Each structure stands twice: as structure tokens, then as C-alpha cells.
Image (cartoon, rainbow, N blue to C red; front, side, top):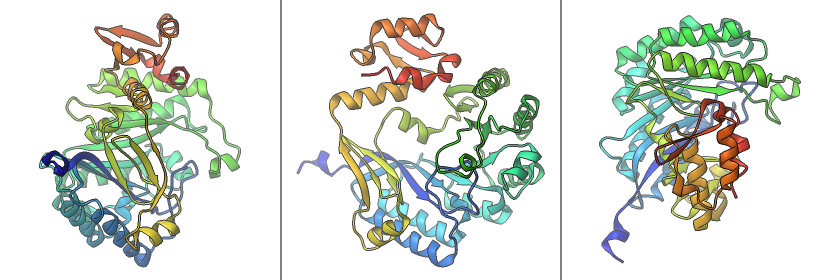
Length: 370
């Protein structure tokens, strides 16, 4: 074995915490509302055991606690997970440490503890600053409460805060949505992730027969693009906006299709040519990972062409775009030219980029890749 073989592979590390206070009507992620100290402890044990199996093989260049709602866990269990991350993955000193949180699971004491544990980026699932929308979603807080949590986070030491916001709620007018974004801006976040509402199979919203107005969503999307760029944000990815220097480093690793490791139920990974994800069953994950066994649910070995294709598609999601040479053989030149004529693609130097209008129809572009 060579020295190179012994060097841990740098990866973006993701820990999936599947627990939530309650399940939102639109959510299609793997999450659980069967909460309690006993299941939290068992899941923490399983995560720590899974992480131990990777010790010495990879090194974390970023750390992301996602969910679900990671901040639902008590501080002592989060402390244990952070220690397990440090022991198993020796994170780089400059690593970005993100934790996703729900305002109702946070207070000034817990926020201060999170900073002491090493988290330097807080991602709050606000969803909306419209009181009516928060009430309909049964989020358990109002805009004033969310604002207080942001203020407390600043006092605790967070200098990098993201809000997740959703556009296209069926009951919101354009004016109400715009006021929600303006209210978010008053709290001066460094980053905004603005997602278009999707009504997916198996969700409560789908069973209620709710639908989205795609034309209204498109209008809100383009308004958001113009408004945030006019107020100092850079629209650097389809759904993501950042003040200069505050782009989400962990997520950029995904969009460049760098190596990443996901631990926890349903977590996805890509290491070299291997793409794999853990079982989606919490019960099965606890049984396997808790016993020190692999909890992989599915996996595939990627060909050179498939890796190039995925990289090109993911990089097109970014404002920078993809180099012309990386598209060779992936998408026909005449198709590229037709999308340019429609105003969906543009050329800038050696790069092909999506326009804001192109991001709106990105899936129509991606399915053209061969």
C-alpha cells in the first residue's frame, strides 16, 4: 500500500437527523415525529458507530447536520455527535460547520452551546414570514418569534445565517410573498435559500388536493432574483442567494460533484466511482448501523461518462455554469443553440450558463443530456 493510499480522502460530510416536532404538509423527506429521549439516544449511538467505520478513510472538509430538525436533539447528544465527527473525520480547521434548525427548538442558551461546539453556520427553516402561512403550516412560531431567534443567534456568535423560504404557497398573494422576502431582509441574513413549492406524492398537501400555480411561481421567482440581486445578494445557484463570500461551501461541493459522505438513515454518498445511499427505513438503519454493520440500501458504480454527465448537469445549476468542453457529447450543439435563442442559455467566455429564465425550466434542459 502506498502513502497515497493511506491519505484520508477529503469529503463533504453530511449527518442526517430525521426527527421533527411535526411533519409539514408539503414535506417528502425521510423524517420521523416519533420522538423521545430513548430513540434520540439510540439513533445517536448508531450514527457514532457508523462514523467509526469510516475512521482514517476520509477527512471532513465541511460538516453539515441536516434533517429533519437536528436542533431537536438535546445539547448533550449533539455534543456527542460533534465529538464523534472530530474523532472519526479529523475536520479541517477551516471547515464550514452548518446545523439546520427550527425556531421552536432554539433559545439563547442552546444557540450559545452550538457555537461552543464549533458550529459556525446556522440554517433556519423559516419557510415564510407571513403569519397566515406559518399558522396554516402549524409551524409553532410567528415572525416575531423567528426574529428573536435570529437576534439571539447573533448574540451567541453566529456570523453566517441562512433562511429557507418557500415561494408559491397557494393561498399567498404576490404581495404577501414579496412582503415575506422583505421581512427576511430586515433581519440581514448572509444567505437565503428560496425554494419553489412542490406538491409531491404521499404528502398531506397532495392528499388535500392542493396545487401550485406554475405561472405565479415563475413570476415570484423572477421577482426574487431581481429584488435580492438589487439588494446585494448574488444569485449563485438555482435556489440560492448569498452576500459575497457567504456561498454555502458544503453545498458547492455537491454542485461540483466532489466526493461527499452521508451518514444516517437515507443519507446519500459519492466516493470516487461509487454512488450509494443508506436504507430509508429508520428501523432497519438502527438495527444495522447500531450493530456495526453497513446500512447501505442501494449503490451503483459510475462510468466515466456518467460522472462527466452528472458534473455538467450539477455545474449548470451554478451561475458560473459549465465549460464548453465539458458538454462535448453530452448535449447536441443544435439543442444548446435553440436554448440560447430562447434566452435560457448564454455564453460567457469559455462557459455556458443558464439565465434566470433558464433556471425556471432547468429540468427541460437537463433531460436533453445523453
